[in-house]
Image (tube, rainbow, N blue to C red; front, side, top):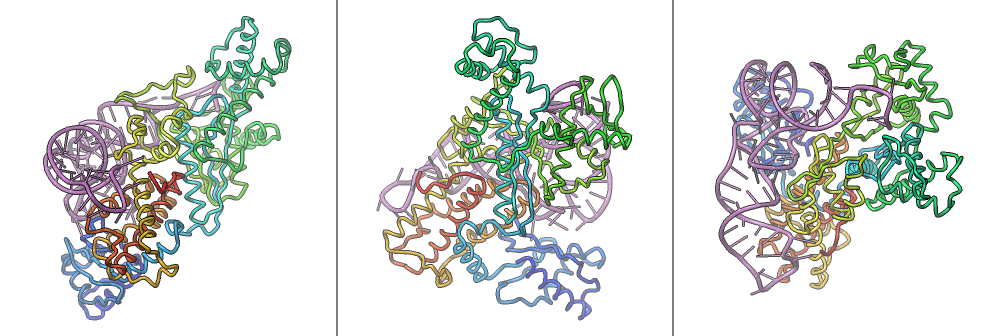
Length: 553
RNA sequence: GCGCCAGUAGCUCAGGUGGACAGAGCAGCGGCCUUCUAAGCCGCGGGUCAGGGGUUCGAGUCCCUUCUGGCGCACCA
């Protein structure tokens, strides 16, 4: 549509020029936008306002000159001058009829424009270290990452979902030691928990499991690795269980230990050192941040000789780049921002082009219940786990709420609202629209009405302005999806769905708009086709979010 | 002190590449079910878009600055 309008304008401006009514030529890209207010038509151009300056005439006069030279094709109904000099276009009903038929015929898939061209996209998300149950913060990460992956996959990209975890550092040792202490306690022996040890009850359960399997055999001189392995296995089982509840799975798991063992981490250190980017200070080895334009130097290898999180992360990103993805998306929390900046700077310094890498940095999640924030402390195990949250509000609500905010805004998760099975809960509001539409089709079947396989056969001329308005909204969905993909902003989908569901509910509630009308088969079929397109849109949109679209509620 | 993010209605938040009167949900008040699902709809009230400069025909949107909040500032990940 936009291209059509742009070409009409280009031709009109050329004619106006030829007739001497306009001196300036059309600018290269003619910007066409969809007005927020449908009273302003289906497409609007600010071309006259943009030309006003060079032309030295009032915008409305220029608009009039262009308007006088416009020749409209049959699919465009009218062009008008409005406001300070906008040129507004309204499409003919036939245009919307055709679009509607396409949306109805293609099923849910109509919402996802095929813009990927098979390009390879990697989404690395969640990437929680296996040291404890997932928190609600992890939930936001997991759902954003998974939904991005769904969006890219649906729009014709080849997607890899990847989970990266750190199993090479001291956290793993601490985890194993924490389990060992609890194990000894279970045997009635005194043992001292390390200062930063993991306190959660789940550690004790893992210890009990070991006791059940091995008795007291691990009490003395056992390989500490046994405790680490048992803990990691048990915790990953929990993590996978939580992911499964949310409908999330991964294609690839990558870990830090592999990068360390096969020398890739050492290679990064060697390469940085070669370029004079490693500084020795206080017994540790630092990345020369200031040379790279960073605010500060950053530790690469601790004085104990162990690499920090950052060094394997650089190696990991080199590995990702080498794997040849067209786009590499990192999803992580705001507390990792400095780390990420350092990794990118190091990659550049080592001669790698970080252009394919894009980071989604989400802000923190707080939980509210009874109007009060729930305090979250990770180490003390006073947080609400992701599992508890899912059990309380359900996977659909959890997913929707995690996405119902721009990622760089804080997310205040209102548990009272989330657990309400009521209209004010936006998830149910959207799902309810789908259930109502499904019931319309059940009713249609009872009335002996069915849409023919060939949507083209249906006469849509009975549709009125209110229905064309609904069609316009439904047909605009693919553009919203394309924008969400281009800007990595999945939150646009739930917001759009809420709008679409709202328009449908308003339409549906008017008695005059009964879709099934026994006395008027022609009208009923036309409205059923509209209903089919709406249902496709809502189901397709919810599917992109990983949320169910129930037929009955 | 430095870096990143945010500041829009009582509350929680939307506001693609600057555009036409600033929107939604919740909360509050008042209405609507003999007819395809009332988990719905209709109406009412509510805003100096944190403050101040600047760019522009036009700024919630871009630039500068001040204030407030969140996160980080390194041998935790």
